[in-house]
Length: 99
Image (tube, rainbow, N blue to C red; front, side, top):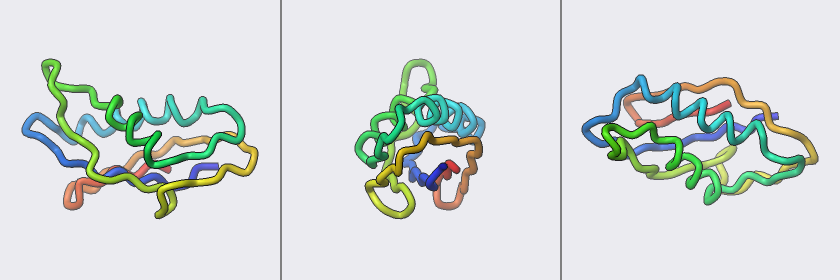
């Protein structure tokens, strides 16, 4: 199970598209180890997405402008584990999609 997560970024000068895979891996590490029946909320994921920033010389390379799970701010889990494995980035909208 992996409801689509969209993270819209406000990127800073030192952000590069090569960071997207690192951000995706950090998010996968969090999402794929959540306990059974954990609901996904935008607030909880916002914190994790902020911590996923690999940073440049100790400075953030982005902040999160918005975050949605299946086009909502809360996803109720039906007693299952999550399995995320795909990350995509749209540079025109500065959006990372996890699925």
